Length: 97
Image (tube, rainbow, N blue to C red):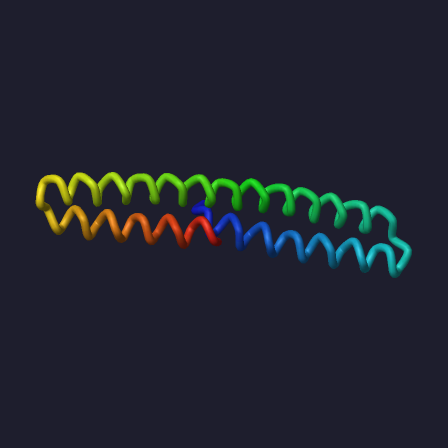
């Protein structure tokens, strides 16, 4: 799965697990509540990992973009500079996601 797909999947599982936990606690089904709590905890943990991965990818794109801009400037290659700027912006966006 892609990182975005992972994050959507994790969010859905967190909500579903939380709902199971609440229903189990409300209706007196401790097994359902425990399974829901476990599902939510696993999803929240996986979501934290996916968010960290996005941060790392963003930093990589920022560095790649800066390098491309520098090389493009030195070699007088406006196309490479533009790609570098695009990668840097992509990294900035990923870093904020």
